[in-house]
Image (tube, rainbow, N blue to C red; front, top):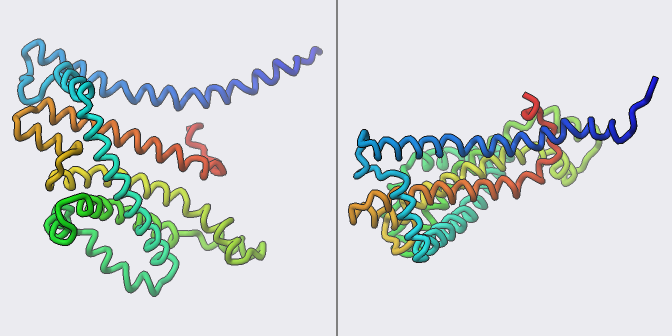
Length: 277
C-alpha cells in the first residue's frame, strides 16, 4: 500500500481554503452584474426609441457628464466637501451614541432617565432639525455637521444599548467562574460580546450619515454632492442629478467597505459558518 507524498496531502488540504477565499471575490464581482445589466438595458431602450431619455438620460450621457465633472476637478471638490462633512458628523454622532448607549445599556437608572427622551427625539424627521440648527449654528459648516451627527447618533445608540442589554447571562457567569475582575470581565467577556452589534450599528450610522448629508447640503451649501443635486435641478439637468446620485452611491459603498475592513480584524476570533451554507 503506497503512502501519498506530503506535498500531495498539503496541496489537497489547501484546496478548500483556496475555494473559500475565492468565493467572496466571485460574489463581489457578481454584485456588479445587476447594475451593469440595468445600465445596458436602459441604454438599449433609449437608443431604440422605446424609452424617453430626456428626463432619465441613458448611461452614455450620464457617463459623459461624470467625465466632464471629473476632468474639470469639480467632482473632486464636491466629493471632498461631502466626505469631510460625513466624516465629522460620523465621528461626533458615533462617539456620543456609543457613550450614551453604553451608559443606558449598563445602568438601569440611566436607561430610565434618558431612554424615553431619546426615543422620542428619534421620531423627529431630519428636516425638522434644519431651521433650529440654522438658528443655533448659522448656515455654515457647524449646522451641517450637527445634522449629520443626529442621523448617525440614533442607530449607534440603539445598537450599543441593545447589545449590552441582550448579553447572555451565562456568559457573565462563565467569567465569574474563572474569577475575572471587573476590567478583565469587560475586556475578555463583555466587549467581545457587544463588538459585532456595535460594528453593525456603526455601519448603519454611516449609511444614515450619507443620507443626512443630502439634507444638510441642500440647506445652503456652496459645494458638495448635495449642492450638485440642487444645481442640476435648478438648471434642468437630469444628467447632473443622476451623476451626483451615482457619486453618492460610490462614495457610500467605498466608505462602508473601508469601515468593514477596519473592523474585520477585531472580529477575527469569530467562528462563523456563513461561508459553508
